[in-house]
Image (cartoon, rainbow, N blue to C red):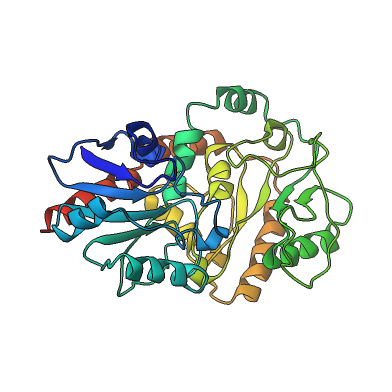
Amino acid sequence: MLQVWGYSPQGTSFSTNCNCIPVIYRQFAQGASLFHMKYAFFISGAFGRFENPNTGYTDWLDTINLDERTLRHIKQGKCIVVVDDTTEAFDESTINTTLQNFAERNKLTADNFVFSTNNLNFPKQSFCDVYSAPFVLEYCRYSIIDKDTDYFEPIMKTRGDWQYPFISIGGEPRHHRRQLHNLIRNQYPSTGICTMNSGFRANDYSTISFTPEVSPYELNHTGPYVWHDINPKHFIHVPSAAVMETYIDYDNFSITEKAFKNLVYPQPFVMLAASGSIQLLRDIGFDVYDEYVDHSYDNIVDNDDRISAVFESFCKLIQMDHFPNEKNIVAHNREVSRNLTIANDFINYVESKLESTG
């Protein structure tokens, strides 16, 4: 089992150290207090990122310096550093400066510094080793599967009392979401549910105007969802969905809980995401409702053209309201999620990298 020490502004006690190990790794890694073997020094938190109160969110490494003991162990080949950002998918231009400055300050190299990210297209770097994987799927599996019986069982038992023909899951009003939202509302101005809100982060995402909306099933619109929560009514009373991922650009290629939920609850969907995202889910083993949904848009590289194709597929999908195999698909997808090895593969990689040091 991998031994882990970690960064904490509260000091270097055993308890704070354990909090540096993300939950998806804890069956494969343990907090260390005595260093009789090689170990990994993590800069992370319970869910994949150390949140630094002394910096901006994307500059989280700017005030972090490794202690003398850790630096000595790195030099001796006893330790490597892991900056774990596995619940985020920032592109190189956004976070490369803080990563590179951290490496230079602490005299780290690609031999002893691993950066892990949910961005599958984060490029290789000369100053650190980049490990990309769809880690968020593993966090979703940990937080949702088999802990959601209060949600899952009512959906499976009562789904079919359609009250709305579709749901368009928008949320934060990013540019690509506004584009698809407006296409949907221009074609279907007074039907279905749209959840494109006015924005909780006060970011100026786009100059495209739109009308914010909320779900009629929601009683509280003052804040965003907790990322792993769902509202069962959205699945019980709505046959199909348009899912809008956080990013759709090549540089931010990632899968999040937005896609995961529609894989493990019954509701065929189209997904506005980066090109190749649907194929990635297939490659992992998920069933993406191909028997009901035309996902040919997934092969389109140009963002605007892909948005138009997603909309065309959406219009075809919502003409159907009967999906006899969807519960079998969900059972399959939940089993796939239970058998994910993303976290284990990463820990094995860190262990192999440690073995090659010194």
